[in-house]
Length: 107
Image 1: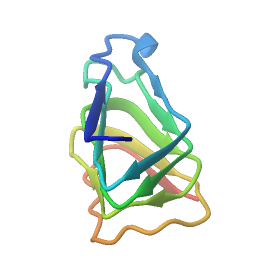
Image 2 (image 1 turned 90 degrees about the vertical axis):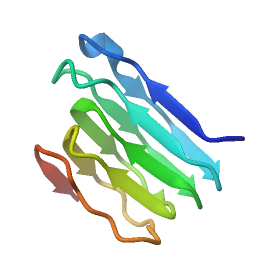
Image 3 (image 1 turned 60 degrees about the vertical axis):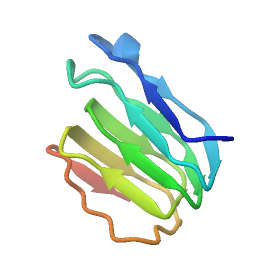
Image 4 (image 1 turned 90 degrees about the horizontal axis):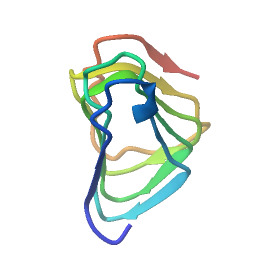
């Protein structure tokens, strides 16, 4: 990433899923959102690495990452339903509060 970025699908069905591979954010922040309009719209990613922030907000389905998350901040808003993290490592510099309203899975 070369700048702060925001991806928002404004989903009304699962056609609004966001699927990402490995993300290198450098010192930039990434905000991911599907909209809270449907419980079928998910965010799926492998990993996030950088010194910026990974922000999850307005996700009606599940936000899942199968790889490591390395960031200064990992922000999960209370407008996120389910969160699933299955990476084997990673580091978040600042404290993380899981404000999501649904399930939390950390493998």
